[in-house]
Image (cartoon, rainbow, N blue to C red; front, side, top):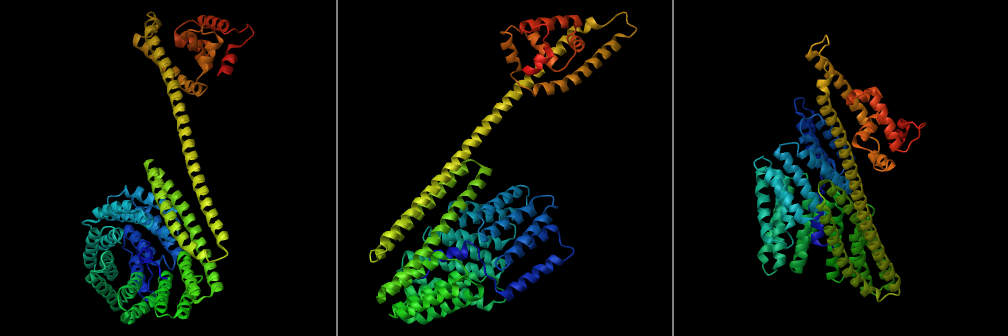
Length: 619
């Protein structure tokens, strides 16, 4: 009835849920607070210390961790580059994952990556890429996580941060664990140990022992005939437990120690004779002690599960049942753990069935279905939230990330269906003995239909959002093309005016004037500049109007308006008087009036119709 080893290690390793002994944590926090209180400390050092405090406090005082990280972010606003802000947002990634808020975790990752591009500090860049890869690892995106963790190591190189490097190697080793790639797992486990020695930190060395021990244990499970690998794993596990005991006052992270004690007990149960039961009980006691003190409910419940297995092996069914019920009572209402509790109730149902108590077995089986349904619903909600958060984050970087997101979601959904199918077959064997088979099967089928419907609705919403975005981009492109056409027409009119001015310049110079030739030229140019200034203002107002203005005029005049007629119309629409038009075109005001009369005829207007009003209506 214990939780599978891989799931337990993922809970301890991937989510960084570090439980802290009260006395050790106080020593660590006091040290950081003393550093923070120093007057000569720089702002970037304040940011780094606040981020470390947030990590140390997050489990027992999550609101305080957010407060400290926000304070670090406020201080970093006064720094010239993005180093402090990148560190703060990378810390937020960890806090939001602990809070189970993936949407904000991905948003924090985007912000951290944005500000990382604004700093050249390689240690900060490495930390941001480390948290980026860690977030992918939490969501089972191992390939992406490995690439980002390796990039983090490139930044850490030469920066004298062996503790960061050791932790990064630990996660790389976990990616290739459980038989995925034994050679790479061993390589990264050895590097994890080397960097832990360089760091001279008890927590890093304890974590390295855990990594190496797991490497030996995974290799042994691939070939159980090599007992030396199992002995090596247990030897390293014992070194870790001995280190934890000797350095208890300096050890901050206790979760690895509890997991190692449980793994050691589990190894004795699975691969050693019954005579080694005392050894298993010894390490179970250690795991239960740590898990009880540090609130590691998942580990604690698995310890009771392993003890019930020993009772069943001895044929003591009542004792096994009592142990499982005791474990449920000690963990009830503390942590949700629906899938683990579902397995416990399934084990209780098997014990009751073995004892011949069908009524009690049915009661336990109902509890199993209740927790299994709860786990199913939580997984469905988490999957939807995770997919939505990944989609929103990926849109900000590149469109191709959306395809990857769909692939990841499809892979997880397929895996979930396979697991669900296997569980369904196991449940079916039991339900064949019960009168409640048809009801439970129909409920389970309806849940699958609802999940398919929800997934289809999500895909439809995503496609609809893409279509709206594409339509909006097309409208913006069309508006831009129309604006360019208007600006081109305005520029053409102004160029033509300049050319006409140069042609008429000689005719406007009065040789008999008391002013010199240069003075007359300057006066004409100044006058033209003033008109250009007025023209620019009027032109901006005019060309914000309907760009189809000239098309409507030509339709009204049966395509009889000349280019000069259209120029007259544009000047009139911009509010230029006959005199201003005559000066601009270098003609007599009388000619302008004649042109107005001719244009009215072409447009089919009567004598009483006002041409200016007509043009305003057409615009």
